[in-house]
Image 1 (cartoon, one colour):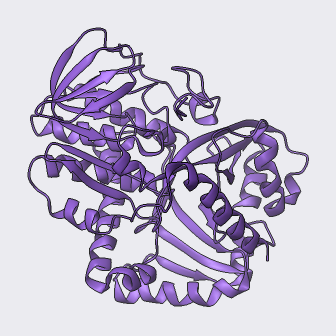
Image 2 (cartoon, helix red, strand yellow):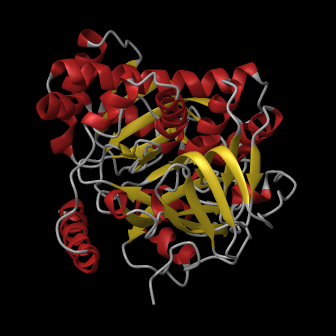
Length: 436
């Protein structure tokens, strides 16, 4: 029996029991596909990529249908850490070494356009998604601090950014109530938000623009052709002139070419009980979000109702841990031992997709089939931009799509059966390195 990530850890059509869901208002259920049909553009997946692509295509006059196996925002788009960071998932020093300065600058520009696009969509449509400015990168080991100092100077001077500030050991420990960090940088041009509220706003905008969304509609197969024929698990057919894969970690076996380049992994978040404004500010003084330098990153921020949201720990098999709260509580207490007696009220997991080079995979699979995925934990802004880039490419404005597709990761080595064991061995090595 083939593994299906859509059903490994969740009930059909039900959102996880997350703080995001508890503090949002989901849209009314959109009907599933009940009969054969046809559309101009079919998008598989109602996350950031799919909704952004649909919105931009509809605004350009296209007839668009989204099919979503569960609910709008059900996947990683509605479960993530909420951080909207600068640039790409890899830093500019790495990108220059990998692709040269010219390409690196194009990627930085696209990363900045991605943040701007999120801000514009929020501001233009008066979306209340709890935006707060500032993200701190925290170095958990002294050996990383010199690179961070140099990187701040590089980005401010060579890229003309000006929003990065280096943090000495004393300052970062005054900003974060933990002795775990030895230095870092503060990015005042980055921000964090409530991802599910933002996503629901995108869905409303798309529907108002004429996009048809079918929830609880799982695609079983995609037959290339003109038109493309998509068959649902209930044996209904949808014919489309053009198709976009916007599945990220939930692609499963729909396309082997994409699946060979993206690897689904699981990540987890907990939310504490409300701890009060004073105690929350003692954890993070200026209400910035934080992510650290570990390979298996810890990321955290405080909420409007003064909880700590803490993301940490990954798993590389199919199943989530039986007790997510206990699983994530362990790294949280390493950073904040003063929270030992604080109750954990929510714990949830999600499946994201990573790539070998931690850059997304933009790929044109056929003349009329496109895909973007593999955001490697940098998904809110880049996935929103990906939707616009895909919409532009479908409208034959391909410059940004070509830039992103040129840096797409190579395939993971080995067969599908070998990839997860190989990944597990690699991740165990990096996790051990984090502890050294």
